[in-house]
Image 1: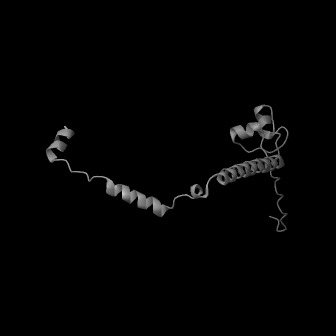
Image 2: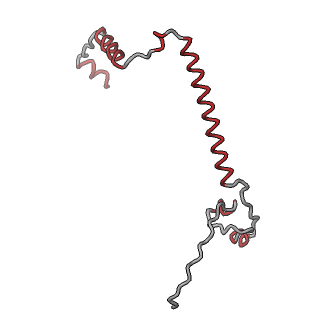
Image 3: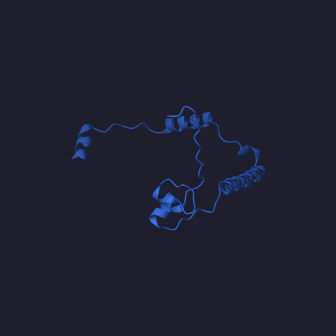
Length: 123
């Protein structure tokens, strides 16, 4: 064994596997045709989209979503401006819980049913 070892060559990273390797979920060597397709005697097709195209598409989608959000915010602002100030405020949780308690106090208490009625229902 030689003590002056040569550094191993790093394998180039394959950005995209061919369609057949993707379908089979096998390692693609990135050549045209790749080794796997050559062995299988199938057509070796690589997807045309690049990583940069995907990044650009994601950025465009994000910008479209941000534009839609801005439009919705503007619409909401316009609606709120047409409403009287008293209607714009949402009821606080404290007020809601107080209203529920008042409603609960107004309801008549439930009377327990006699046991013989319950026994008849179970049959």
